[in-house]
Length: 409
Image (tube, rainbow, N blue to C red):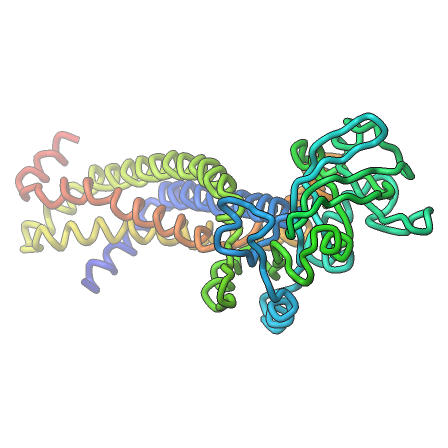
């Protein structure tokens, strides 16, 4: 094996120009796939961060049946203890309790249904970007009326009610004890999230006001959890034991359409990889076939001297493997350096920042993932295997066939 490796290394130096071209092709191909994968994964990470950070959170604590069929009566009964326990976990940045119900809102003679959400302002600022969505007024800030209570509406809902800042809004719903929940509020803020459904239905109250209105006491419906990184969702669920009567949900369960859309888009990278693999295989196979054709006399002499066909095959395969290895290693290194560099400086695709869900994004930052190493390994394996066919042709030749072919050439 060692002698076959030495012969393979020596063969690379015989046609330095051809070897350089083959290595260069593999280098560029590997660099392209590593950088493209890093760029895609960076954009997917931003997509997940935006979707989960807007309002959902990277995880949630709920009543077991609440996600499937939300009900006023399916509550988390001891949220204070759960919040205290969550703060002790290293992967948790913040957590926000919420109360939710449906109700009717009225301004004058205009009425509309709404999703009422009671929140703690400071907890929401730390957990989600909802406070940054307020484009008019304040996020549950001070009111003008002495006995008034603040309410914040989505832009679409405010437009449907024709409500302006300072207007009095009547809420009518049902409390947990079966009584009528009715209260007057003052519009102090309008939210523009960029999500039409959210803007058309969302109304925010202070958590204490919502609990009092709905006769819930200390109970809540959700606890949204913000993690240091959305990728830590699996680790959080594996290490966290929710109290009896509650469940912990991953963002994949909370946003079931997000992961499939990413997988669909990721399939484009696989197609790109397949094209690169075909180019790499053809390039290496062509280079090694030319090598075999040029060295038929040498191969014939080796076979005549007793060299086994297996050793001839190993020599050619080592030659294709070595040049593939050099190209892939250098290409991977350049790809990783490009990803690390642009992760720091970012890649700007537009002159105007993109605003979504209270967060602003103006650059894409590629990241390194396990795919940054798997794709080059696939290219390396393809390049190595591409030399098998020319190697088999060389190994199957008899000394006489090799000499005659050389004489005709």
